[in-house]
Length: 167
Image (cartoon, rainbow, N blue to C red; front, top):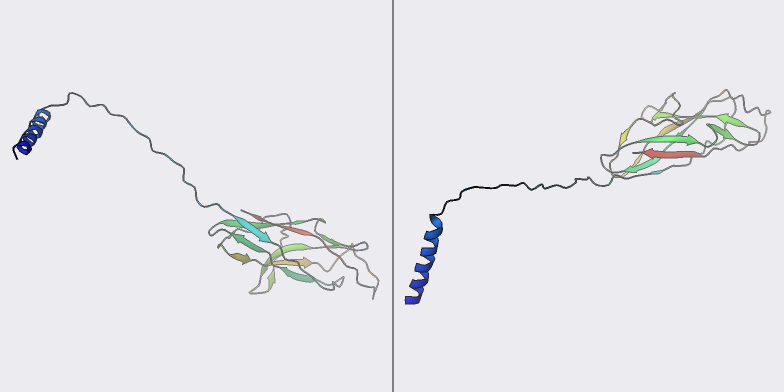
């Protein structure tokens, strides 16, 4: 027990020596804490859907609905761009029909008038799931590049439409 008391006394003496000491100066420095903040990677993909207009009667307005599907990250703004490989024409060896891609309001079955070929569509916002957006395809009645005889056989016409999603 005598040894424990001497240890306690020794600790007390050492603490007393430091308790009375004063510091003459203080030096300071800085430390910078940094990093980069990044949100989750934004992604989008698109699936273009084929559209068959059936028999197109020259001289008659023809309309169809194109419904590409975009799958973009939640909250990601995006738009579509449509590019025709034939310059906005459905073509075959003997016939060339102009067409346009327009806005389409399904709830009122209303086709827009402004041609969206080569122009970004109004911006939409991704939900993280596949979103189908409908656009109209319009072939005007007056078509000077396609003159067929009455009761002639149907001539297949086509174009490849490149559907892009911009994000």
